[in-house]
Image 1: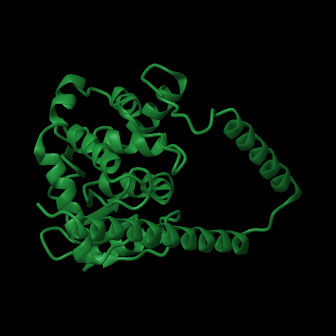
Image 2: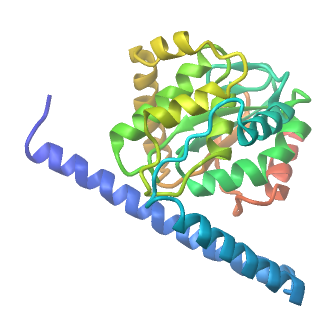
Length: 277
């Protein structure tokens, strides 16, 4: 076990990686905003709506108690709405561990994400609702979720939340946990992820045995999986999330850079190319 200067160097590397990832996310957000401006003109009604949204968000933040965790649990209106949306998207699709889709699907998309990453949330809400019905549900594509720490500030919090998702995967419900987390993701850097929050997410996963899930979280298998993900991401040269590899199932996957995390078009084109090759 290393100590001293070695630990300082490791901490510095993590800090540098998080700062680099935040810089990349900021650049991506700016690029997305510029493209949005070119695609459409703001009408007077749009301006009014935008102002109203800003006001509502400001009120919500002001009344949020200084970044306190808001926990959504099963049975509440928000939880019911999230559960219904997630079930509509992935219900009935085979799951195994961290994989969504037919294990024999001809094309594989490997997706590296941080559950607290806001750009991953944009991808989840903007792109996956197109890819999953069109390619995953039809048996053409399977998606593997892997973890990469970028947005989460504390390494231990990152490991805890990612292990919680993988532990749900032991019951083949990992994607329900992942999707629910992204749907109810809190404000970045607000420290919203704690045990109560994770229990709230788990309570919304349909059919999840909470006792078995709790036991599984202490198994070294899943913390080892998080460590293996970090090593794989490093070997691929990934520093930000979401990051992707795409290719034929069973073959060598190649780095895939779609250029957008809100529009499905580049993903569809790349998948179609793989299906035809």
